[in-house]
Length: 260
Ligand code: PEP
Image (cartoon, rainbow, N blue to C red; front, side, top):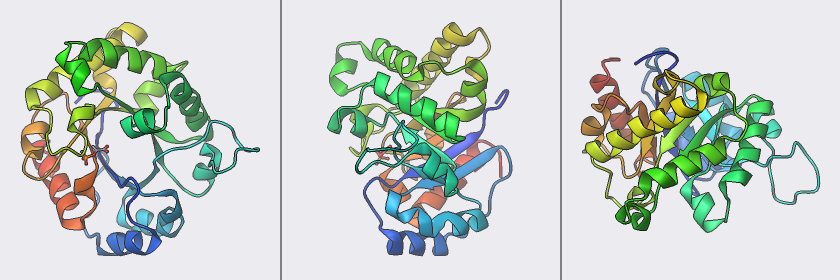
């Protein structure tokens, strides 16, 4: 891996695990941190962030949020700002997840506003992009991913994308379906994402950006996916809910990436 690229393996718990269950997971967590070329973390529901801040530090896990609002404060009932997340010790925020795009109507321009706010607040960002099955069947997957990426990045600078943003390629048809992208499909899209970044920020930038894969990652398919050079780690949904399964995914990735 070149430049600032890091192996990042993050769990997205979605709307699972309230404070008690979340604490139980963290208390059981025993995998030691893997050094500075690898970062592992969990994005629990908002209400479970507070009790986890100290334990996360102790266990060497990065704590993430699954969403944030783009304003710092104000009359936005039900929202939580990036600044509030930073203040309480959150490290990263997931933006542009397909569930936010498809179920909550978030478009890339809205996501770009949140991304700017998150960076301003001092958070790192996992920016998700990915095509639907229909778009892939129409042969439009690269066009769709390139459009999403360009619009969601907004005014992000070269330094910001290299230092503070992880791109997560998450084909919608692979999320929560048990059907992962093949190493060939994922590898091709990861290489393409690096090309889009090169076009936007200059040759050589793409190889320096961390690009994760997400979509039905589990212990049985993680090694073949991790063996693709362009895949720097994973955003894991369902399989991050059990300590043993998530730890297995991390261990196998580290072995393949020769970090253990
Ligand atoms: C996700 O929601 O980001 C995800 C990748 O889910 P799963 O691993 O369950 O497919």
